[in-house]
Length: 453
Image (cartoon, rainbow, N blue to C red; front, side, top):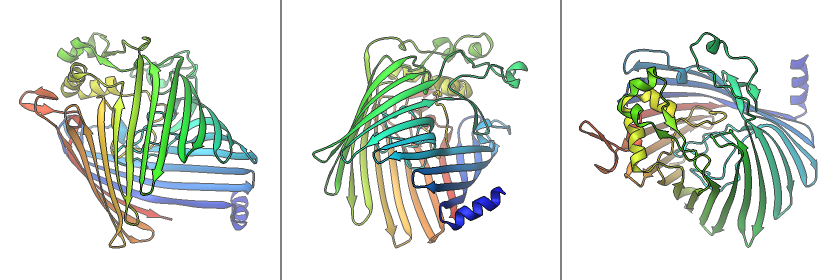
């Protein structure tokens, strides 16, 4: 019966189905235990749009990932981050109930800031890859009400954290389940439950004044994507086009800091933290009332028919000073697993497996992006440079893409980290490390094939 209904709907052109199958093969030169030299990620994606009525649209974007990892430094083992999973990137109902009012319920990626590589004002979504910003499509579980006019719009969103999910599918939102997991009962996992509601409320006033796009943003959150409780934040985003140039900026202002700081004893003797219950990290500035900010300014220049060059400066008020970075970096070099536990953020949903993930440990970053599509009709060349300005360490990503068929896209990308200026980062033994050379991989080569349908 369900199949028959879908068939009838498709014949009336109110069901649209698209998708792709994708293969990402990565070969790497590794440097830390637990890093695989060869990985394979296969993805089957389907996107379904259903419009049964002019005042109702339903959309789903789901992917099934199969992942494998081999030639693991330190010995073969099962790595959790390379297990198969299902990712429901978006799944929502969009209801334009009146001419100027719409209601949206479900999982959706909503971004109001103008930044390309980073969005300081984004309090909702999984982080994106700054070297490939459009790759992350996963959103948040939310409800949005929006009143929109030609030059003015008002939006209000409330979102809940996925407190439990298995194979990428949520089983609990906002609050933790009453019962512990089987792993906790067996004593092989830590019970992370609490009695808190994990949510965020955010609103946006959009104005178009003198051709300037303006977003005024307010957010209130409790243990949603970070460790802040009952935290208010205000944000501003601006953008303006001048011919082939677009300039933009956005900033978020709040009090305190959720930055992690490494316990000195864990740095000097990591085994103590593993066996004696000593806290790995602390967050000493959570409840302090000093003003803090995350901000971004940048421009984008379009040349030729579709070529783009963009540059952005990102300031991260949560970033480590030199001493704090050295403690975290030293911990990372001596015990990578323990450091990852300390550094990892509290995002409500990791989203899709990213080509490159960044924990912004420092304060000052520069991102340069270049893209020249339709070169020789079917070829695109692009490159990204992500630079840590405090130690001049870098992540360089040159990329070549070829579309031999309308339905087939082939990509080769190389991820090359550089340690930066000697003496400005961390020295262990005779080796200097900057933020980007702390990666488990010295160099990675990614070969990707994607077939659309």
